[in-house]
Image 1 (cartoon, rainbow, N blue to C red):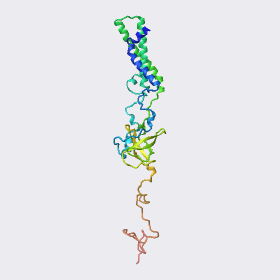
Image 2: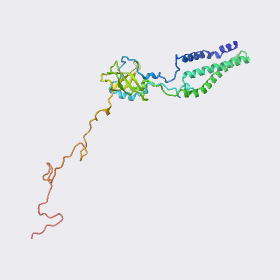
Image 3: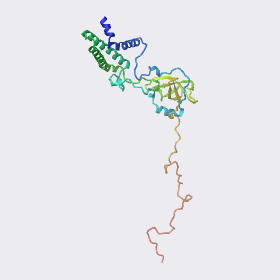
Image 4: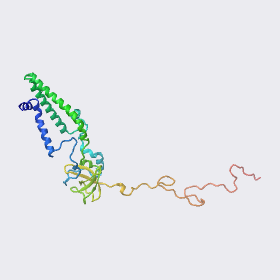
Length: 302
């Protein structure tokens, strides 16, 4: 027992002892339900889809006429900018080939393997009786380097089958509702009060807190556009939205005329023979009675 304690407290095993205690304590808390492991790109549980408590309005948001442009230029995923899902990505963890699983899993595997390998190397040195001096110091540093390389290799092998347990993808959040239409469920929506029901692209519905920046009438059952999310107050800014398909068709140009193809209609021609030319038009030229037909010489009178 004394040799084991000496190996645990000796160099280089002692370097990983403190980290191993932290890892063991963390997973103990996880098992009793007091914590959760960290996943990059994770923004919280699915309950974020539901509206939070009512809050007072925050800073002024864009006016209602700009709501549609704001929703188009800021897609629903803008709240996750700068976050990368825990799938294959960039960074030092990806460069080492250890991405695809939560960071806590990677750190735990590296720590446990490095501690075990350094302990095994320290016990091997003590058993071999290498003594002291520069040779012993060099051997201990070689054990440290071997433990680090071995820990990385073992973690690299263990991470590959674990990736299937952590599919890549960003966790859903309230920002996914930005740009969607909602139905007002309260009697009105003001700058300090209002609720609406919104349907996510996957078909799930949620009641969220909404506010408006103006005084547009938004009675119960009316449609509104969620154009921004206020994280401090946990509510959405909305603006009235009217579907153009629900109202009368917009006014357009008159039907084209039958002759000109434009908006003007030609005057109808009078029935029967034309007896008088319309005003402004010269009458047709007619031959006098007894005139010879065209192309013939008149008969001589002598």
